[in-house]
Length: 87
Image (cartoon, rainbow, N blue to C red):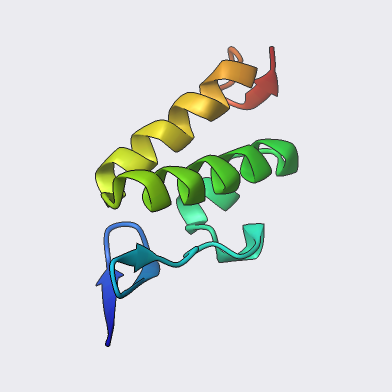
């Protein structure tokens, strides 16, 4: 049995299949606009990989988002203009 959860807040679908979580973001094109519109492409890759890994491990969307943003903030920071740049 497959359960599909649509989160309007984040704009993604996650699939739960027999206790496992499928990757909701197969590519950076699948990321929410709030991520795609603000992060450089490398930071988007970091976000995607960290999110998918955390969602698989913790099976909680909120935790996965926290982990993903933490991973981005490890390598990137906002500059004085509010743009994300490599540290």
